[in-house]
Amino acid sequence: MLRFRYWPGAAALTLLSSSVLAQQNSLAADAAAFGAREAAENMDLSPDGNHVVYVGPGPNRISVVFVADLTTGESKPILKSSADPEYLSWCAFAGNDRLACRYNAARNEAGRLVGYSRMIALGTDGLNVKGLGPPSSVVRQFDGSIIDWGPAQSHTVLMTRADGDGLGVVKIDVTTLKMEVVERPGPSAGGFMSDGEGHVRLMEIPEVTRNGDPTGRVRYHYRAANSRDWHMLVDYQKDDFVPLAIDSTIDSLYALKKIDGRFALLRVKLDGSMAAEEIAANPKVDIDDVVRIGDGQRVIGYTYAEDRRRTVYFDPEYDRLAKALSKVLPSLPLVQFVTASADGSKILLFAGSDSDPGHYYLFNKATKSLGEVMTARPELAKRTLASVKSISYAAADGTQIPAYLTLPPGSSGKNLPAVVLPHGGPSARDEWGFDWLSQFLAARGYAVIQPNYRGSAGFGDAWLGQKGFKAWRTSIGDVSSAARWLVSQGVADGNRLAIVGWSYGGYAALQSAVTEPSLYKAVVAVAPITDLGKLKRDADHYTNNKIVADIVGSGPHVEDGSPLRHADAFKAPVLLVHGDMDGNVFVDHSRDMASALRGAGKTVDYLEFKGLNHQLSDSAARTEMLMRMGALLDRTIGH
Image (cartoon, rainbow, N blue to C red; front, side, top):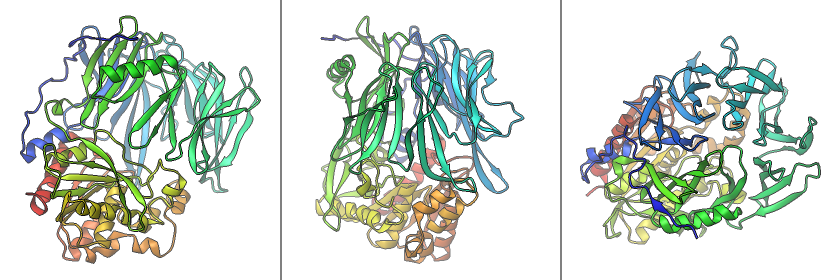
């Protein structure tokens, strides 16, 4: 049996202040605390297990790469983004003293918003920065992706790269940039997968029209070990087969495959036999991923989400470790093994809960000790956060809709002002765990319900349906039923209901105000879709235009389901929020909606952020947004 001991403060990083905001009830304090960006994102462990690298917030919207010594606790900033327009997405170790990082940005080209990304390598001291993409003379939108991190101290990675001939794979030294072609570029390849041992074993081939536009269907080819010949694995299909990982220790591919309308997990031999074994299936939800430990190391389990996210470990060692951790960290049941040192002796993990934003820990197998590396959101460390409860409610047709209910800490849970918070996507879902937006609302005294309406992903094809657009009436009806359930259960005061949403959730908030104009006293829509026809037209100059057109469809539902075309139906005041560099939903959606509402004589407040994308990844911007949102809710449904 494992016995743990803690390292009290052994790795308390010094760069980030440990001070926290005192528990306060002012709107300004709540907005600042919950609007602050995470202190660490996409943390990675060095091959020797002695350092971590992560992306943290700098001043304003700047993102900063930090390297921390886990022995001394010292954390140093080594790289920062310009913030206008670049932001750093992640960095990872390509050797103990070398990093590979990706940064993203967007720019306007002839009136069109175009996203791009670049890959760079640099030392852990921040020096010797080099680009990993093709020569600067090659016009490109994306540099490619690292598909194999190579041996621990080799400094070589396998990376997909595109040139004028198509997509290929190169082996590149991240220090010297010495390069070897592994797969020659070809016009048909859309992606590759390695076995983690330096061998490219899987190739994705997207189907395209005569004009070169993707249809959304793909096929896959594989290689047997020690062979250069490609063999058909799966012919052209759409969303029914999803490769996840190749485990070289058993020469097999783990993949998701639709069985009876839900994703099951298969293990397929890559020895020429293509023998497939069903590893896991769930009658209620999709199996959604596998868990592997370390770069290219073996697969140790799989995941799915019912009322809560679950991980099943078929690796005995990690199954025992997960059970032991659940006893050591009983208040942090959401445990993820992030990565491990090259020899597997040290494991970086993340643990959180519904009422705890989470903490990074390092587990040392040799000493059986567990030390906290850092907390994800230090601004919330001394606050009492709300608990989240899994519930279900009946839709108008009697269908039971799964949802999550968050009540203000210390409240009676009765006759409260309440907020319906539909998720984005629509082909996404809410899960049990920490959510900064719902926690902000609960801290302000509001009950919050998050419905996984029909159109949500993760519950199988029948539930996903027409993705919330063609069948928007069903999705929006389920959202409205959530509000009525709150009232019927005595949780909410029927005269103090509001709706808040982001992306498709913002669309759902606006469209709900069209179909049920008297139900809500306030509407907040962040980066919302406002016109389904415009959503299709926005894709006209992009390669995914046919895919978007198919998702949205044609017919009366397009006009009926576009809140922009029904501004006269609104009764409640509206707050719109958008970043002008949003490549997911163009900013014109909110600009046009604000104009239409003003033209119809409605009450609307529009907040636009220059230089920000769909996520609004800026603490100051998020704080301002929460201030405006909180003021509107306090004015319309608050105490």
